[in-house]
Amino acid sequence: MSNINGKVYAMNVITPMKPWKTGLLRILFFALWHIKPMQKDLINLSFIEFARWVIVPRRSFPFLAQGQVPEDLQYDYLLFFSNFNGTWNQYIDAFSSVLSRGLNLIWRWSEKFPGSVPITPFKEYIAQVQFDTDYYYTAYPYAAANDLKAAHIVQSSLDQLAAQAQTSTPQQFAEAYLQFVVRVQTHLGNTGEAPVVS
Image (cartoon, rainbow, N blue to C red; front, side, top):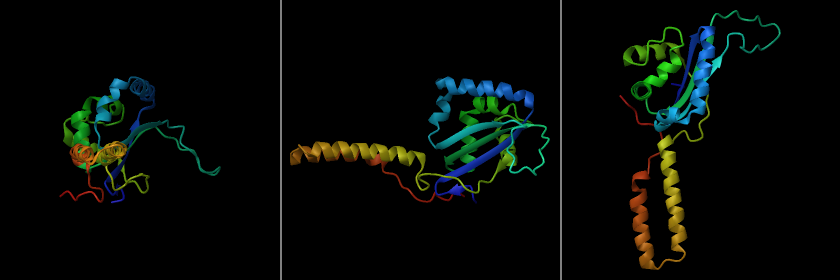
């Protein structure tokens, strides 16, 4: 599947909205951007590498050449882009259970949105409005977001150990090394292809 690259899965969702709803959604996005506590739950979902919503008004679609006939669209469109670690089902389940209120605030303006709870109609809706991703950039395709966070912890701990080693006696270094191993042992991840989930 073209949406998967290593441990990273890309999702694109496009949903139509009636134009009069666009202004209301822009106000909501403005509030979400400026009131940081409202972003807490999304940030705490550590397997999400990237998530973005974009509104494209019906009269703002780009034209490739002068010969292209302007489209007479009935709806504005809400685009959702995301990169995450794990399976599609895990991602949708987490969104539904942790972010249901926020998702309902954002997607409720889209046509035929069933709500994020119960999960089955929500999954069916996402499956209908999702488009495959042919190409996307990921800096570390074989590492999950948590792998990167863990690598920073290991690196900073190793830097501390190296600095301490400059002035340590062998006994002090042995103690510092043991503390280093204990501190980083839960952060030594495994990069590579994502495990196959049946």
